[in-house]
Length: 164
Image (cartoon, rainbow, N blue to C red; front, side, top):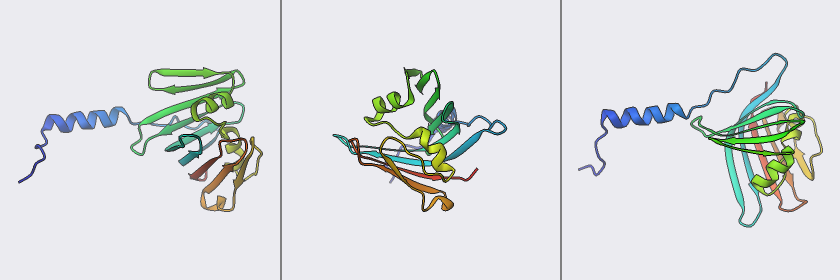
């Protein structure tokens, strides 16, 4: 005897509608625009420690760009946009704006994240980013790991990405 209630047509339709409503379709790439997608995992050794993983779609450049984070099912979790005028984070109907991308990511995670350096790293170039060291030894296989020991809190960022 099953303890699970039977699935009704209405339950299935509601579940499918909710799933489809949350799906994100990245905007098409513009000619000459740098763009990468893949998975990322971030661990910040703060108190308490924080860990986060998501699918990512990164496009643009260090001066103007967009980073979209999505769940494994394609639901948009957050979109970060930046330009020389500042940075903003959009989560659902909430928007947070700050003067810089570093200020925004520090507020969110407790540590400035190397989003701008990721453009170089994803192209296989070592770039300095506020104490972050990148290991590009697996870049040809679509993987990289970046670590920051100083300033505290220490952090680790892992990327698995598709080559453009």
